[in-house]
Amino acid sequence: MPQSSRLPESNSQLDKSSNLLTAIQRVNAELWLERSLRRLQSRLSMELSRVLCLKIKLFSEADFFQLILEQLQIALEDYPSSVFHQGCLAVALVQAKASFGSICYLVRSSQKELKDKRASIIPTEENQLSLKLSAEITLEELQSLEHQFPQKAWCLPSSYSAYSAWLIMDVTFSLSGDETQIISGFMTGAAQQCTQILEQLRQILDLQNYCQNLQTFNKNLERTNQLKNKFLASTSHEIRTPLSSILGFTQLILAQGYEKSREKHQEYLNIILSSGKHLLALINDILDLSKIEADQLDIHWEKVNITELCSSVLALVKEKAGNKGLKLQVEIDENIPTLVADSLRVKQMLLNLLFNALKFTATGTVGLRVCYDDSFISFTIWDTGRGIPKELQDQLFQPYCQITNSVSNRQEGTGLGLVVTKKLAEIHGGWIEVESDINQGSQFTIFLPLTPNAVLQLDNFPQFLAEADKIESEEMLGTSVSLHPISLDVLLLEDDLDNAHVIQTFLKNKGYWVTWVKSAAEVWKVLTQISPAVILLDIQLPDSKSFELIKRLRQHDKYQHIPLIAQTAMAMQGDREACLSAGVNDYISKPIDLSELTRIISKYVR
Image (tube, rainbow, N blue to C red; front, side, top):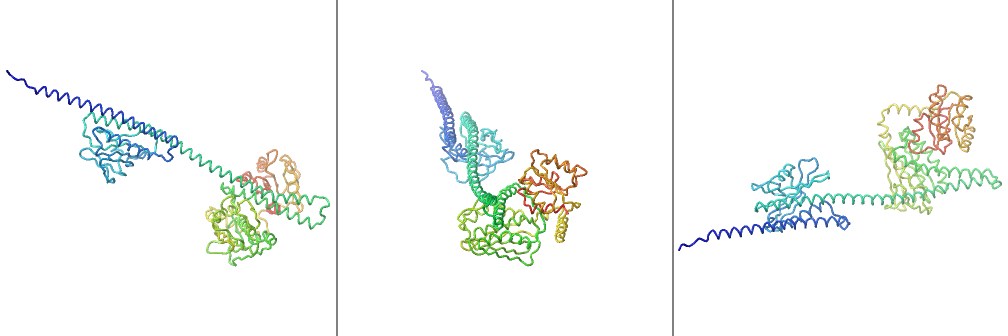
């Protein structure tokens, strides 16, 4: 009886077993895919929430990319077939509008340590990459890896314009087609998750940066507010001190029968004048710093006689030195040349330093030494005072910073004098140096070039020299710069009664005939009766017609040649330029220095 073969039955069972095994593997792979993507989403979301809650203060995009690679490494090593036993994962960053980038982040399989990370990326014959940290990779290579099979690169699209990020996987695949698709699907899903989380992270980081910048701004604002309050308190104190003297001694003079001695009245008036000048100096320091910082400070270049300038400066500080019992010492190089500078600003710098020296010196000497070296002139103000500690010298030139005066046991001034002095020296093309030791006195030296670069670069430099020489020779001959036909009539336009009375009285004592009017309309009536040598006009009037008046005068055939001098409280940056551009010949700010006003008028009146 023939026996039947069992071979087909055996093959059938093998096929069934093989199919069952394949199905199990596929199910396991699909479960791995779902589980791994869910874990990745959960891990990234958790980190994002921690960043959002500020539990991680220093989390950055670099941390995010490294976290992605580590989580992908864990997932791939957990794959049933252990596909990641010889692979590595990387993130490449490509700059915007660039054709190449570099590998910035990389992790290798923990199952096989690969130490060398510096070689370039070279595709092998088996279509495998050799990823190395910091290696260059082109955008063309990345796009090629993105479209090959199996896919090895995934772009993480973003609205962020600085650079684009690419996720790269370098793994030796020994899997079936289905498993390869699952791995590719996992990387595609991971790339989508990373893109979404990365966008949210960037928004959070931008918000955090904004908040940090806002906090920094608020701190700076608070510090500025504290400095402002300190400055206002100090300035208020300084302004009230001379103002008290002005008001107090004025009341003494006005008090009937208090003191009939003319000598005492003269003493009181001198105190009032000194206090008023102190008050004006405080205001000028504030305005000067504001003008300097806005690059609006007027500099009037001229040839300066150093000897004469130093003499006038010392005359102003002589009285204060005498009152404190201090000696004044002067040394000026015999061969000192002429300096091209703004004489008023040089005088201001020297006075600031000299008054400081007198303020901080109890006994001994305060000196001024002027030397010439090559193309620079140095002005050294020295004293025998207590000196300045080294640790405090850096604060000297900071706005509103004051060093306690141990001589008078109180702070004086606004803390702006040295700041203004330093900036004025720099405007002149120079600088200032300090040397001081405790109980050894101090010395401040201003270095100024004979001719600043700002003057050398003037287009009309030769003309400037010629005009400076002409002015110098005219002053030596005692003549005026510009003369009006013989007349001593001055037309004064001023709406303030007290200011008008002061100017009118002073100019009358100087021999001028002053006609005073209160409005622009009255000017035209007076011009039909007199021919003034100059018109001295206030800019800020109740009817606000000063600029219109200037324009009409400049357009009138009969009056357009009359010199116009603006005397105004408009002393902020740009005010002088506004007046001059409107058509006035000269400008003087209030409170008016009457001697300066006389000098200006004398330029136009014989």
